[in-house]
Image (cartoon, rainbow, N blue to C red; front, side):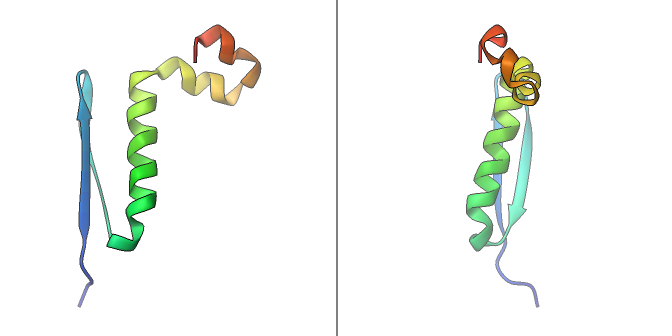
Length: 61
């Protein structure tokens, strides 16, 4: 028998909905994954800046 499962769905204007599922003890990780997804979707240039820290200012992040 599986334990309780929770689901966290995020969406926004111009951002496709995405659902993350796990156990209640996974909540912090689910929140982190969801936040990262929304940030990358909203600020795609910042993803590149994170991999090249010297470009952060140029990307406006």
